Length: 158
Image (cartoon, rainbow, N blue to C red; front, side, top):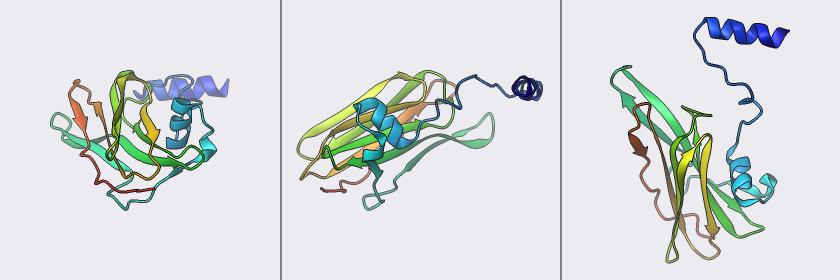
């Protein structure tokens, strides 16, 4: 009964509550695990030696007169598999399907992108032993315009 009352109160003040979102909250590690099938405990977020990690994806909404944070973009490492994982974890529109992407570029190997209409995150991964990597991510705003972070510098060389 208390849960119904909380939802009712939130609805009365104009907040939209989607049942089940609290249970589906992803972290960068659990997003990489969901994409790769490897345990989340094997992923560690890397330091910011090649640029900000996480990158914060923002845009200025002129109608609202405010800067909106759309997503955070993370770079993780899995030592057991010798692989990096780039994750765009949505802040705004979390739980709503819209175009979201994550790109991981492995120097002298190639660029790997996960991009589609996703509810929570996009995650790209690839083996990167003895290579440097860089990453970026993007998602759409409330009007459907796509915003992306700049690529980080090549760094995080394993």
